[in-house]
Image (spheres, rainbow, N blue to C red):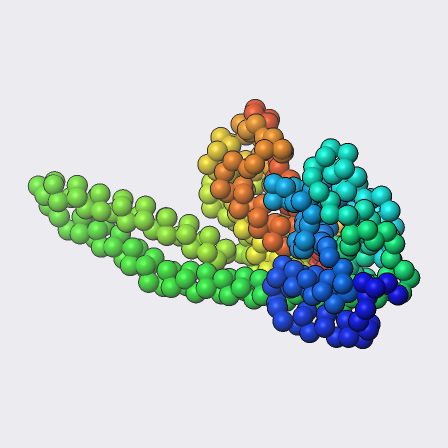
Length: 386
């Protein structure tokens, strides 16, 4: 075994396990375990990529990156494709391998980016757990051109430990987000009940009182009557706004199905719903809430900006996905998917979709209406309803 692996395998695995159990923050955990791995193996340099669908990846941890790759906040490490990423995306990186031709190191030499500190090769190990893939672990040392089978086996064992910890941490973070979402839902429901039981009732009573007083005034009390008219109109307007707020906090009809709730909300705003495919879907409460909030914002945008009184809605599931589509034939707007989303509402919809592993698509053109589509992973079933 190489001199870089002087400690016993069991000791290395023990140290790694202890390090992984010290943090629940994914980035802190990976940074700590990378530094500890390099320390116990005698290697000098390492980095971890968390990888999504190509071409998206994140340099989540790194240690002792040479100056040639560390300039501008490690820019060469944070963008571009390379052999190990391509092999991962192609589904061919299932075992630890020696990377003989590292494109990042080759580019550093080719374009004279600076000192590579003797790094020419590195080992790449996939991070997996329970059939899920999360990213890759890369390690290297000056003038080390080959990792033996024993070294790669040890790195693979370490990678299994890291992959398991990543899976556990991500699942814990997901559970925390879900608990927080449920708490927010319960709080919104409580506020909606309180507003309905107190403020709304008082506004309604104020409107009735103003109307009753007007009926008992003589024809000569014109100024007072005019003030009561104004009071009655203000109370009615406040009551309408309050009901709209309650709608947003706790949508009426969602318990009958997400499409029923969205349809009622659109009609509440004076929009005619056309082409609505109705159905009650057996959705988790949080997924239903996410669909409701995204659909609600899309409906609000139609009401405020589309210059139309008609809206189309469709909800369907297929091949492990559920898709909500909101369309209108209004004025539309110039949308460029390469540019940042311009409004807070659209950004909010995108962020909410991504929070639950969903994808938001926007298609719009001036004079040609708008289509908002959100797709979530879905393993449920459609039930009878509506």
